[in-house]
Length: 310
Picture: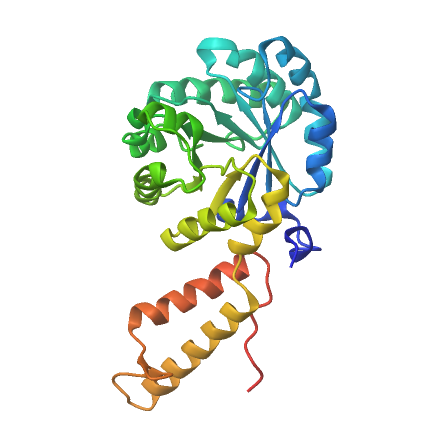
């Protein structure tokens, strides 16, 4: 089922951070692409004023922040802006993003807690100036180097505004000193460690974008992400949104199987059976809890998880 249609009637803006599956970057000064992104079905749309916007177009990109954020909100997507580090031209980027009412600020090249603290202070000042509730604007650090990767917990603890973190692909590979490949084996350890660090820090882990175009390669990349427990992914290709949304959403079959496992487990326990079985396999307590978590996530995403009629 198409990602945009899957949640028809469900406002993505009102769902919690854990329900934001797809975070799509869009070139900050490409007005046509920015407006087209509203139809992509991505949960979060990111106007990128950093790498995707050349220096001579950054002022033009900042000027588009207001109308673009308004269009994205109207489409039900969460509007976000990736800014340059404050020590470069980030102050100007942030001013435009805050005036536009961006829900989340992605900080490029995050390296230290001090950067996040400085950004937090500036956001607070802008919230006061624009009448935005203090604390409403989220910070999403971009983890682009090995040094940042091993400091994820410290970065998350720098501000209560940090709700999620995003790992880069191209910049991380460059920092490690390896070439990017469609198989992404070169980033396997970094991605796995990033997820574990984010879980420890209790923030949403946004997997790195897959920057190759072949669908088969994108599906294998998602296999890796899903198997490790990622619940969110960054994108640069709008053509991959439906694929990622579908893979990061419990399917009807998964929901049905979870209900069946829970029913068999609870019925057996009620009857006094110490070790319930399903299709010849023992149902362990962790499997029972995993089935419950799957249904909880489906509810979080607005899906109908009512079980079969008795």
